Length: 505
Ligand SMILES: *[C@@H]1O[C@H](CO)[C@@H](O)[C@H](O)[C@H]1NC(C)=O
Ligand SMILES: *[C@@H]1O[C@H](CO)[C@@H](O)[C@H](O)[C@H]1NC(C)=O
Ligand SMILES: *[C@@H]1O[C@H](CO)[C@@H](O)[C@H](O)[C@H]1NC(C)=O
Ligand SMILES: *[C@@H]1O[C@H](CO)[C@@H](O)[C@H](O)[C@H]1NC(C)=O
Ligand SMILES: *[C@@H]1O[C@H](CO)[C@@H](O)[C@H](O)[C@H]1NC(C)=O
Ligand SMILES: *[C@@H]1O[C@H](CO)[C@@H](O)[C@H](O)[C@H]1NC(C)=O
Ligand SMILES: *[C@@H]1O[C@H](CO)[C@@H](O)[C@H](O)[C@H]1NC(C)=O
Ligand SMILES: *[C@@H]1O[C@H](CO)[C@@H](O)[C@H](O)[C@H]1NC(C)=O
Ligand SMILES: *[C@@H]1O[C@H](CO)[C@@H](O)[C@H](O)[C@H]1NC(C)=O
Image (cartoon, rainbow, N blue to C red):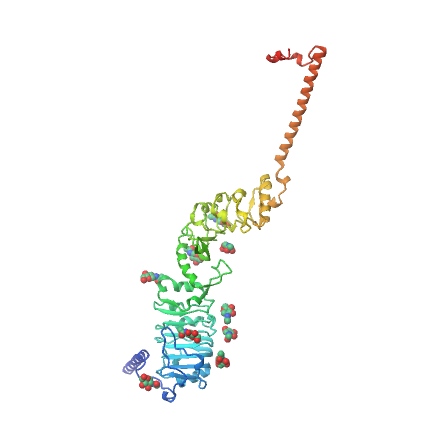
């Protein structure tokens, strides 16, 4: 019992002492492992200047100061600089040059298959830089209470595939880290644990174009935004989540766009109906009324909506409400937030008519209006009379089965054919009752009844003219007989006297 207590006491003292050493650097202790060579035998190279740690920068030397042989050199009592090493030579050279006073390390162009950051040799560092090399994999984790304040793993061809499980974990214990430079790699995972730890930290993630934007967004959320500083902000890009991505041409964006996104997310949540759960993304910049405006794209597709969403974010230019059960477009004319809308995608809904759009700003200005696979019964062509003056806009109506009659043949069909450039899918607009495409509609198919009726009118007119001619000839004949023979033929002689008869007498 006593022995084990003693052992524990010694252990506790060891930890305490090590803690003091790590934090103050100058406390000497026999518990520390001894260096194989006394430090005084090596003098800093004359060409290497003494190094001052600049604020926000890790200990960093340029290539012109590279030692030739050995590969590592002590630049000053606390700093070691190595160049062009592989993992074996690094181990060897560090064993020689590192002392318990060494707090700064820069290794330039290390070619290392597996860098184990839990190695004892890294334990006392406050600034650690392995830059401009090729590191296959980072394994292990920094020891608990590691005092590293600045970590530079820039330009090492690192990908998250080789970091994935470890990048979160080694950083987990870096409680004193204030600068992380992981620029110019190919990381696809963001060290979120670092930026969510409630500490001020500067990170440089420029030159990693496959980091997901949603991670940056998380880091930029109101609470952590004051804590995280992105170095090289202008040159930091992120990849939009492809399932979120409306516009396939925009995949990698500068992270400044995410700040816009932050405000946008707030207004996106205000879209009604409240449970619509639409997603909103900045679409593109445009000059609107002399001001640079971020136009917004809203995606409310497949949300089981029964009505058009309202209260859209300011400057909504695109709206996708496809695959819902919307029956009316009334909101486009009633809701002022539709003012800037240029693209409206209402495919696969239950819209019966576009008549609600008559006179709206949208119908006069739209670029894309897609109404395919709806329940249109007719096309009110007059609503769209001003749309196709320019060749730009497209109107898509395929997959609708409209009611076809003679009016369709006489009005809608010619209108479709006339605007074929703006209605690219005009051939897929069908007539109901399996009558085929509207553009193939023939006059005789739908205009029977009216023609029969007009034909009949001509017969009646012909008959009437004939009767009139007969009547006139009969009256003329009667008159001639009366004049020559002096009597009235039948039936004139049977007619009663009329008040107007005096005219003839
Ligand atoms: C990290 O190393 C790169 C490449 O050598 C250098 O350009 C950069 O300034 C260093 N970053 C920090 C924070 O020291
Ligand atoms: C980096 O180091 C390797 C040896 O480890 C060497 O072959 C290569 O030339 C070095 N690269 C540069 C740019 O000096
Ligand atoms: C470490 O630094 C202290 C004081 O700065 C010095 O006395 C000691 O000799 C150094 N030790 C080594 C191994 O360089
Ligand atoms: C970068 O790493 C990949 C493997 O992850 C390797 O195939 C490629 O050769 C490396 N590129 C350079 C320039 O070393
Ligand atoms: C970076 O990663 C992406 C995706 O993982 C890959 O397509 C690309 O080739 C990588 N680039 C380099 C230089 O390794
Ligand atoms: C942000 O900070 C406030 C108070 O500082 C806290 O109440 C809130 O829960 C925090 N939100 C997040 C998402 O951490
Ligand atoms: C909102 O949509 C996202 C994905 O688009 C989904 O993860 C989330 O559960 C949805 N929320 C609600 C309340 O439907
Ligand atoms: C609109 O949303 C539907 C369903 O999510 C999608 O298939 C379609 O590609 C979207 N349209 C555009 C133009 O983004
Ligand atoms: C919504 O439309 C889908 C098909 O588009 C249909 O299966 C579903 O029953 C409709 N739901 C309602 C509530 O009308």
